[in-house]
Length: 286
Ligand code: ATP
Ligand code: ZN
Image (tube, rainbow, N blue to C red; front, top):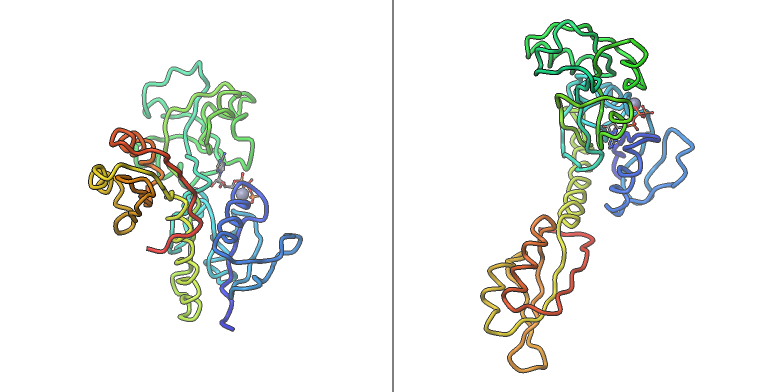
């Protein structure tokens, strides 16, 4: 058995379920109760460390863990030197500056001289410096959105996803300073045996991600439309075409990208396709 690759994941919070689901989709099984700090995967050379997300970059940098799954917001704030191996497409959010809705905002210069509350002093500090703005940054660790109403600050810089929290606190988002999602990070100096395990894991993650972005599509079409439909549905190489029992008709099987899905369906119907079935794909190896 190879030396296990240590993977740090958030113990409980907005990254945990999606991180562990991704690992499960990679066919890696592990104990489901996260009562402990550590757990071994049953069928893959991997060990899990369940940590607070803020501690993950530091633990990876300090060799306690080899790789980790963390938000780009936390990674940048900690400023540690780690390699971003893959952007994972979940826990998407943004770091934004918001002001009370009565505030007359006329662009970043309106932030000059303000008190701004945030849990991200480093990212905010760099942003303000780049914009040539001097403001007082007040670091607070939680409930940043209430800072204006309690008189602590005139503006906030906080994580936003839907924006509901801001609105319900009477705030308006005025600047987005970072778009973030979960990333897989690694120590840059990983030993070759562990790097091999990481490559295996990455191969699986990419297969799952490609599959999640694609659908298997089956349809019936008159034979004279096959060429036109083939051009719309190139699939992995080219579609499978099988004759139907009914003369002059065929069944086509292919793969379509989730993003193009509705547009392609309309064009297919225009080309005479019928009985269109769309099926999720579990894994996809290109
Ligand atoms: P911990 O106890 O581990 O320190 P936390 O309270 O700091 O957790 P969470 O609220 O669980 O952190 O958020 C973890 C990460 O999830 C954030 O750093 C960010 O990358 C992402 N995130 C935060 N808010 C949202 C959201 N509303 N939607 C999606 N992702 C989010
Ligand atoms: Zn945290």
